[in-house]
Amino acid sequence: MNIVDVGLVAAGLVALFFGGDWLVQGAARLAQSFRIAPLIIGLTVVAVGTSAPELLVSVQAALQSNSQLALGNVIGSNIANIGLILGLSALIAPCRIQRSLIRREIPLMIAVTVLAALFILDGDLTRLEGAVLLIGFGLFNVLMYRLATQERREHPEQVPAVNAPVPPVLIRRGREAARLLVGLVALVAGAQWLITGAVNIARALDIPELVIGLTMVALGTSLPELATSVIAALRGHSEISFGNVVGSNIANLLLILGLTVFIAPFGPGAGVTVDVLVMVGLAFILLPFALRQQRLSRLEGGVLLLAYAAFIGYSLL
Image (cartoon, rainbow, N blue to C red; front, top):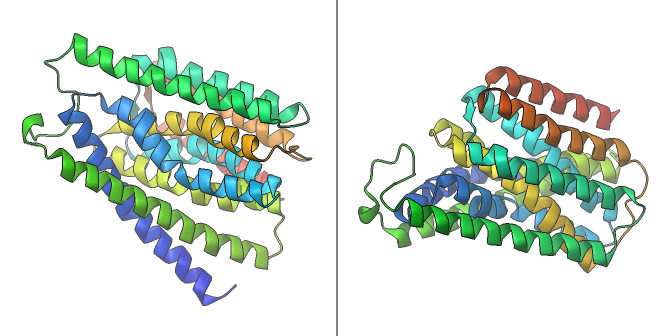
């Protein structure tokens, strides 16, 4: 461990903070200008954008025959998204959960999680399974596009963005798109700096690769989602916050795991069963939480955070 690694971690945290702020502002105003629900933006553009670090890390690790790091990154990121990010966001500001999420996206996330878990636990992750996941990602985005188009057609007079006082006609789309893009670049760069520093520190302490993937790398690559969701919660855009997490989990399994396995098939190896079960369990627990009051309360956020802390403690034992 040296001063350079510590500096990378610090610089990464700064970039993540500002990048998350710019990304949320740009996404929310673009959604308002196009009369697209912020939830749809959160499920697609923001979710895929904040999942870019997971994609870069997992594909690079697979190409370097480091399947344990790649798989641990995807599983650990999905666990962190629900346990840490949603938990912390709910503690800051209880999250409203739209009915459409309860009817469609949360059950879809659960189905995708179960499918990916079956692929992981069947002994080998094959190129065919990767193709199935990638096709699923394409179908998911087609569904989101159709929903957005239908919403604009049925409710052309509505402006769905919340807490955005600027009239849609006065929003400069080019400027907001640039703000979103710069925020995304800052998030990816910040995550990469943080990952590099954190992994170097962890390896200096002789921590195993799978544990690094499940904890340090997964947490690092989930920091864009964390920064985006927390800032969205603080700014009153809880629909972006919740949609970001659900969309990111779907993207992690369909796009990132699918592309990683399609490029370089591998066997999951030993020691992932408990981690996969935790990922599936956290996905399932969101549904009763959402159904209870159509919101994620501070108490439920605390439960999710405690579950994540228990998982990290277990992984480090």
